Image (cartoon, rainbow, N blue to C red; front, side, top):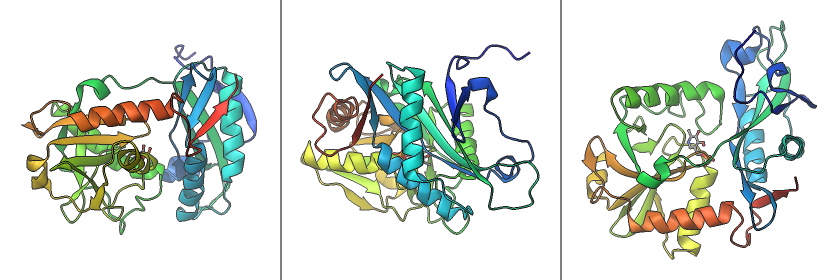
Length: 310
Ligand SMILES: Cc1ncc(COP(=O)(O)O)c(C=O)c1O
């Protein structure tokens, strides 16, 4: 009998059913296990005190990206955005969350014996309790990884494909072993790509700059959110372009962003401080704006929130 785990009380969605955590399984002979043939999303949900309900951030955008990821991976059928969206909402409701959660919808090639590398397509969704990383307050120290970010000619980094994440995993492990908090990966051209699960921004001469979407990055939903908030809330237009490694020495501020990492300052790269090595004023204002939007404190003028009554 396995040791009790932290999520044993939770329900999981799998192929149309809501099942106990321990009963959600995939066969050892599935292409999901054999080839990492699966795509996923990370979605955040927050408890809104003001609205007395859970609010899910940019759920439709995540589910749309998951459809695209399935097409890029050449799945024989596609689990639709609408189907997954409804299942996510129902899972959050059935688990009765009243706190921050991380939701992970996955579409994968299941089955137990077919020789097909394109199906059968199945789906699963987990939702677990997860608050904000402590490091979002203090800032993180990043290492330029000796692992290169997968290039578009090797693997489709634009798809949120499970197999891609060995690249992230190895870079993250190397950074931790070497005493850093996380990694910053360069692409084949030697330009800054992104972190293991987050996009990168720096501020130079007061101007936010982020790696272009053709720099071998995931087309991040938080990156889009941040560009919008910097423009609308802080009055700053972001430059999307290639970033050289040596520019990090000239930046006043830097930060990572992603669904899981939210907005996390980078205070140091390879032991060299960014700016004065402290969390800067732009990133602080941005963090507050981001938090107010995702938790439903501010009015949702852009239609980014999905409310779930518990
Ligand atoms: C490789 C990678 N880059 C960037 C991000 C940020 O993407 P998003 O803002 O859509 O969560 C993620 C996911 O969180 C990721 O896995």
